[in-house]
Length: 114
Image 1 (cartoon, helix red, strand yellow):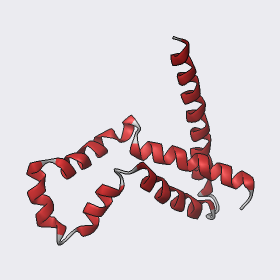
Image 2 (spheres, one colour; image 1 turned 30 degrees about the vertical axis):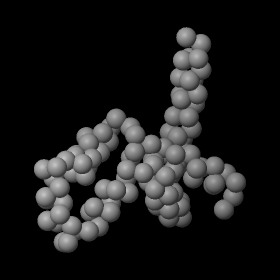
Image 3 (cartoon, one colour; image 1 turned 90 degrees about the vertical axis):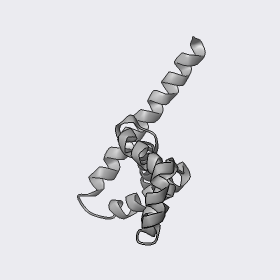
Image 4 (tube, one colour; image 1 turned 60 degrees about the vertical axis):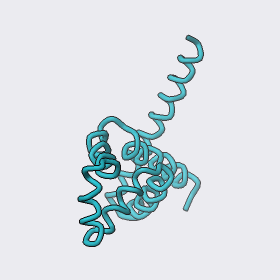
């Protein structure tokens, strides 16, 4: 793996992790999952399904940890980078990740000036 590929994977992982864990566009899915995890009403349903769907509970807990999401995103993106024509998705995420980082730096700078 070259240094450029490592930078591309880092930026793409950053962007995909943020998309899953924090961005507004995925908020409806996350809020339903959090309700499922925390709601007393859903607790009975979870207990009922925990024997038949243990992977679902594990998955819901996994996406609540940004570091865990990042590891899984990195693994998936490494595999995608090896697939011809699909690696475009990895580069797209890397460019979006770089743009997102620049925007965060500018927002932080603007907040410090105010």
